[in-house]
Image (cartoon, rainbow, N blue to C red; front, top):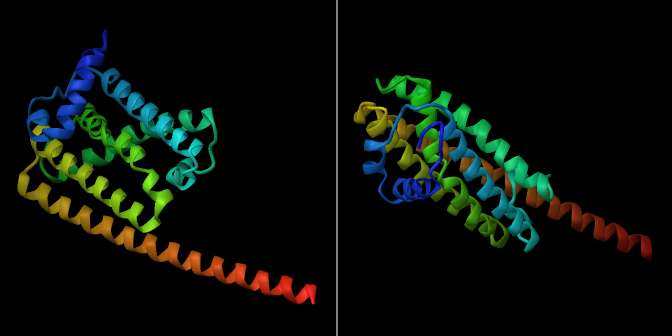
Length: 215
């Protein structure tokens, strides 16, 4: 793929390779050639994720949408997913550039954006398994964590194989990111549990108040 054409079949092949054989893919991926290719990748991944989130919403798994998508409906959900993907690609490229610099790897912005766009292949998978949030919150959070950890595994290979960062430093950074991920998960679960308890208490008090008013 280059700035003039986009080979969709090659895109599908690369997406599959990224997921199933990341070490091999990142060791041979192109890290130059313009910003059009990674931008198209981000748009496709975001669009697919948006469609899946929208379908889960139609099927009644409302909490699968969650987060940034919670207030969007209809076609806006689809558009918002694409916007988030594009913005996330550029922000992720900056963050990865900083990490790559720490690991003594490639600090070219385009190279880091390309790796970030490739890692975004997990976005549709996250959306596909988002229905688990609607089944059970704790189970959904665990699934979400597993997907994030796999995304981090892809990031490690992209950092070492494509950006030529030092493996030892990349491992340390990965462990730090895993620790932060677990902390945020625990804090999030604790906050959700507190919110649930407060809501249950409010509902109980409201029901008792209604009973008293009827007497």
